[in-house]
Image 1 (cartoon, rainbow, N blue to C red):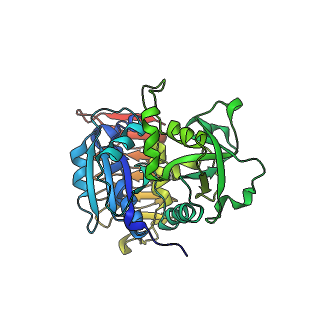
Image 2: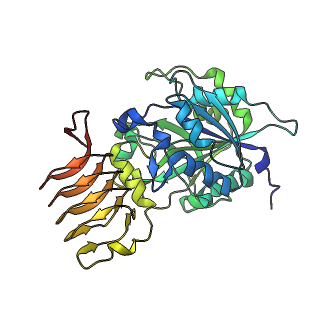
Length: 375
């Protein structure tokens, strides 16, 4: 049994980015505020850490900072500091801002969780990392996922595990896996193992000593992966634990890590739950759960919904429509015989009769003309 030091641990949330791959949604709202089954991503992140026993947060803001600050400030019984990153100069730079801003407490050095604002992990998964951190006296703990799909390497850091390690311990919070190298977004011929790092880390404050050594990368940013490499090269105890036990591939990674428009659907469906209002339990409406419908919406006859359909407030769905893997945002109107699969329909959009679409974000411009963006 270790001494609980949660009170001496801060959670840094990186919420300053533009979310370019989420346009046009991110042109209106920043990525941390994207709705995931009724709650913003950043709110879900904070509440899960709060449930795990952590209540001190440093929020790095930048793009549309006022919206992020307003949303986070609604959450009660937590301590928040907002830190502005005035230009997008990388994850390491954002974390460095947090380190230099925080006043170290008199009880000793402060340790940090560091998380991007586009991943959501449960209380149990967060505590799994924390327990490994405490049980092994690690300088740094990385969250890991396992994948044999080389497409995953295009968006994540790949780690090398100490030779001879027992890989069955990858989920063991008493040992985990010792990491001896990391490479960011490797080519296929550079892949070190089937383990990949997610943007959720737990580090000791002494890691700040490496920040002065980080140089600007080819992308024009300071990369946090370089901090990890400095720590490994310095002989620090750097460990990883597999917190997503499902085997990951390019099709399901979006449930956990939101990077593009289709991932909004995948992450929403991961959390999809909700009762079907009584008025929609009719022989004339076929529902294949999970489906969530706002009671203020109107659905006509011979409509098929599901699986994986979310219908927000004040939507209207005419006869013979078929929806699968779809989110209808507020005040969407579908005319007769619309057929949609893997689609997000923006607020106030109206689709004509016999409209069909797949793998698309559908919105309307100022002239009310439809714009279909494929993903």
